[in-house]
Length: 224
Ligand SMILES: C[S@@+](CC[C@H](N)C(=O)[O-])C[C@H]1O[C@@H](n2cnc3c(N)ncnc32)[C@H](O)[C@@H]1O
Image (tube, rainbow, N blue to C red):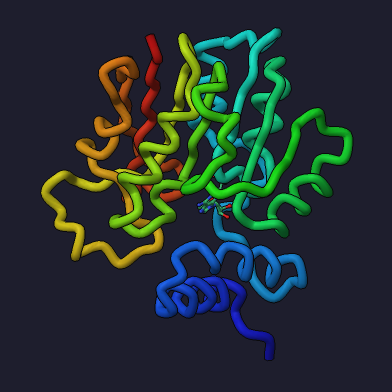
């Protein structure tokens, strides 16, 4: 009998993390999923509900503006942003994720590229009017999160918006208690996306409709 794809996903993550390779498992997982041997647990086949809600509330007009989608996976969030008129770039560390995104959206205007958030292209520095980060920081071990967060913030251009969606955990829950991936973010971590000129303008916490025991942050930040 074939192995449960969910079990395969967890094993792939564990093998990589045990080798002290915190990002290698993403490519292994997407490659196994492309062969039908695993499932990508976060691949919803649609944009994230909190991104849809943000777009409906904010009605952003992306005409003449640029957007960057971080850790874009198979591309559903990037497509929503492109549909709002933004010239959209979407990146992922996994080449197979990028290939899958291109295959999922053959007529897309989105530029899907392979890149590493922890070492992004220099010309992305403060280059985008909108940066969307959903579930990438929390997919990295807590020790890497401050560096990843700093890189996310450095992608937002002057006057630009940063939207962050992440699973939430209480501030008093110790890091050692979290058996990731994922490693959900505390309120303090959501506040750590701010800098003197990147202000938090809205932070909401809401339960997941699929599993009300899971709570998610939606943070919106604005660069002066
Ligand atoms: C939990 S998934 C979320 C994917 C997508 N944002 C979503 O919400 O469906 C995290 C994604 O980030 C990508 N990723 C992890 N580390 C990365 C890094 N250092 N640079 C770029 N992408 C990364 C993974 O390959 C994966 O697609």
